[in-house]
Image (cartoon, rainbow, N blue to C red):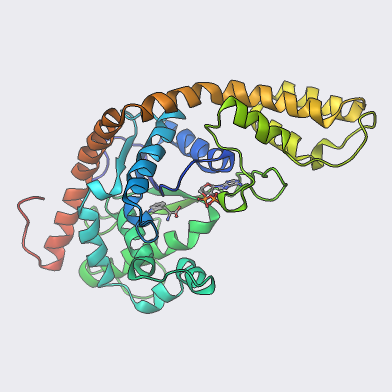
Length: 348
Ligand code: ADP
Ligand code: TRP
């Protein structure tokens, strides 16, 4: 039942929510692509998850393709990495139900996502409430070893591990109570308990105003911004009022913080010296940032436009990913059905 290769299987889901920005790129997309070098990586577009809030069918379809095109444009290799739409693997809903029957409401009540929806007066439909169960199903359906997540998703991952334990106790004869020994080898039958790879070494990318870059603050630079838009956004980055001739502190400057993400070590040293040397204005620094940003993102922007112009090709890549993902998912569900006492299903 283990993967034929010795590499660990990593899996992560990405919610389709509009245009990605530099925060998403440096905070999530780039680390995810790096992980694919030494893991059997699987990425899916979490369209079922988006449905807790999205009511516009066109936006759902467009944004789902948009995320797929983004990952591909940024370098995801769809042969090496499995990429698919969550809703193309219906087994995930079956597993959601099986997990639901072993999960207490007390656990779900503690989820940050539910607390957040309550605190902010957001719609609290059953999908929001059961979001952590669907997320656990996403992960457990593929005998996942590791899940790269941001800090905000750490609790959901812990809950997925708890749900795996509940199922294993209920149906696989595992011992209830006490701590689970994660160093013990997996038995190849029960649900595999995944480990989180929490990306807390990834710096928070500042937005134009110095706060965390975020869609909701409107302070972002889109990954695929046109050259004109890019220039406009870079020129709008807030800086202090140190006069042109005076030395400037690179370490408190938003322009420099963004430059460091894109430039080589030598380029960063060079710009640092210019800041400290005086007679170098923020306008000059912004032009330097613009140059490295344009060099980095222009090929991706072009590739993204090409991919989005061919929705059928994108759909074919996702359909191929779904076939490969299902081939992993089906035996997992078959295994569970057998343990639970459900009849074998001809589709599995
Ligand atoms: P937003 O705040 O724009 O709504 P999301 O919460 O949808 O962004 O984030 C999606 C992913 O991008 C998460 O993995 C998150 O950690 C990462 N991310 C978002 N903004 C930043 C940022 N400013 N710096 C680093 N990572 C970020
Ligand atoms: N909940 C994650 C988010 O909001 C997306 C997601 C859904 C996910 N299923 C997942 C992430 C499984 C990792 C593993 O960003």
